[in-house]
Amino acid sequence: MGAKPATAWTSRLRGVFDAVCPALCEVCGRWPDGPLCPDCWHDLAPLTVRCPGCALPHSHTQPYCAACQQDPPPWRTVVARVDFAHPWDAWIRALKSTARPGLSGALARLWLDDPAVPALLAGADVWLPIPLAADRLAARGYNQAWALMQALARLRVTPPALPQGLQRAPGAPVLHHLDRRERLTRAPGLFHVAPAARSQVRGRRVLVIDDVMTTGATLRAAAYALLDAGATAVDALVVARTPPPVE
Ligand SMILES: [Zn+2]
Ligand SMILES: [Zn+2]
Image 1 (tube, rainbow, N blue to C red):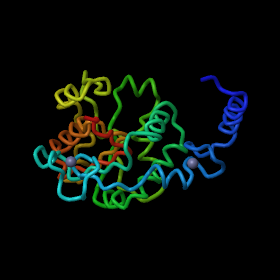
Image 2 (tube, rainbow, N blue to C red):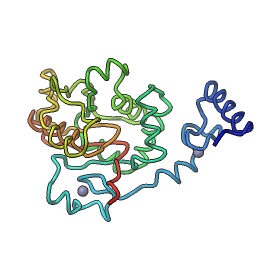
Image 3 (cartoon, helix red, strand yellow):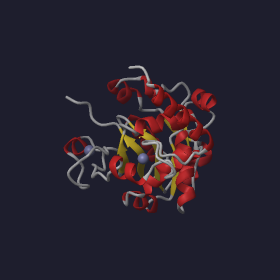
């Protein structure tokens, strides 16, 4: 369907506003509420009870869901704030394509809106981001997980960060392009703890941060690497969780 002249005008006006006024709501375009207006926040980011093992919606926060009881994850708790669905999928894609502080700042505020997140931060001695593959980091220029961590650290006191604590093993596959089965089988050995960070991981409770949890394979690989390096416990925090496939 072609855009009506009025819609085209609205769209052009929106572009002008975007350029000069970064405070538009990213979802409904209302101004001047900020990157996410209170109505959209309320409607699109409800607090959802999730399984602490897989971050999928669950009837209660303890114990794990049946699937996680059968195959427990290596972390104590993973917290996801929203489903990887409209509008958060578009936000996270935008966050990956451009380091807009407004987007990462709004997502950090969403995190803190969930009481589980301050609890997770309080239970960590150090925190670190899931690293990007070197070629992706070179192409993008920054790591969106690190951008989210920095946005969160601007809003509250956080444990010490180890930005280079995890490293991708040389030649490790980029899981993004793989299907679920391939992700789970190829993830082991994906990461190792940087030699310089080992002393800060050993004996510590580590919080791992990422933007999206898809199958959990990447987070599992990170948790195994940290536990191998002597971490006493690992928790994980992501913005969004991919919902289970519709049967
Ligand atoms: Zn809005
Ligand atoms: Zn679960």
